[in-house]
Image (cartoon, rainbow, N blue to C red; front, top):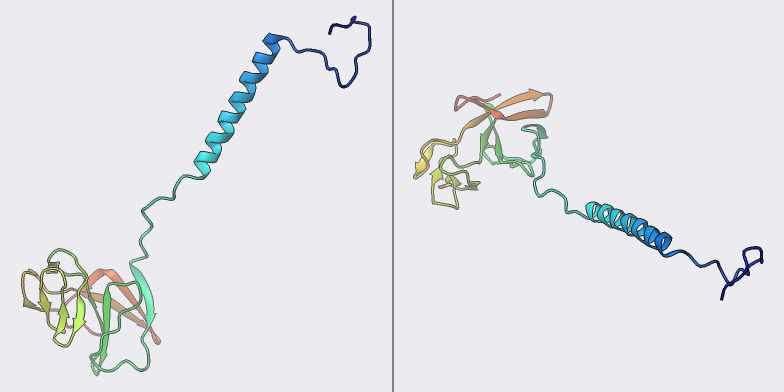
Length: 159
Ligand code: FES
């Protein structure tokens, strides 16, 4: 239905849109839709699988009930902390063979991966581990211990 240009059109009978204008609007709409969907896709990207490792220097307080020579392993750490009459010390629980985490045992430490065994002071009891478990630097601030997993000390160093 065509109307004269001066004739007033009804709200229910809008002016027909030209094909060129329609195609332009459709292209613009498609562009905005693509942009919005790409933004949505970016927001839903999975988080990185790699998480930051915890600081290598950390504080720990030994439980009062810890017996002499009994290992205390702070949660989330690869360190065994001991207390005896001579002082406090920390031994890394990372196997010196290929880096598995050793478990404490009656004899000291045992590696579940290839069977290495370590004495309570970290010395190699049974191979294939080539070196003893390293002793870590411990500083004492009141009752709080600061353990530095990146600093080793001579075996037998207690604070
Ligand atoms: S990693 Fe411990 S024995 Fe191989």
